[in-house]
Length: 311
Image 1 (cartoon, helix red, strand yellow):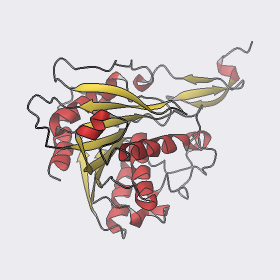
Image 2 (cartoon, one colour; image 1 turned 45 degrees about the vertical axis):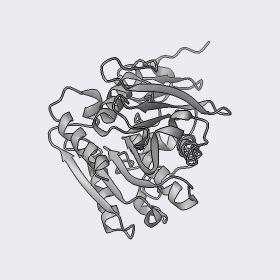
Image 3 (cartoon, one colour; image 1 turned 90 degrees about the horizontal axis):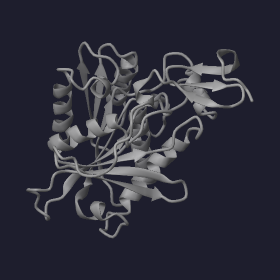
């Protein structure tokens, strides 16, 4: 039996995971996102928000958690906006079901009074990219199957307005959100109108070759010629059909430069929508997830909510 000591490490992608010579993957316990406990679905006693977990792809077992606002004063005839959320975690950690995501999405639902579907895509490297992208797009296709009111999930038949859909994610989830939106625009997705996209502290690679991404996605060069790492290299960028995009960056985030570059790329492209950039001063990457008591969380959430509710 092989010993999993430092001498037997083949790849060290801390703080995310390590790969041992025998093929074993070990996620790093030092990173909060790798250790956040899952929260059971049910009713939040404080907010009245209901959650339900649904396996939408029996073949792969891929699921999603649906968040439903407090309906105490809801009129059945009034449809609610829908947010489709992809969690962050470098494509390799995190969950739509964990306490970090639960806390964040609960805040969004409270502020926007929207239905949220948070997708539990399969994680790399055990499931190499582009599997996470494919799972995430499959979730959007599944959502679209409810556009006639005859889909498999009653909550999605009854409550959301599929002509007011927002795609959102943080970090790697923001990368997925962008990819899904472009893909839906190119291939067509009957019954769903993507009004806007909200990318929070988006990950679009690093300045140099991204070796961890290349390991997780063997078909990628890990460089800027990969459209998933550099949307400016994507010939389909101008075909993106959402009306507006909100890009959120943080002053101390090492990914800030790439987020600003994404904003500039969209602004100068032939896409034709409206793109907005907001920067949170004095904060680091995904502070709103890991430091929810920061005084800067509220202003960020309010801007995101305004982006949704004024559409």
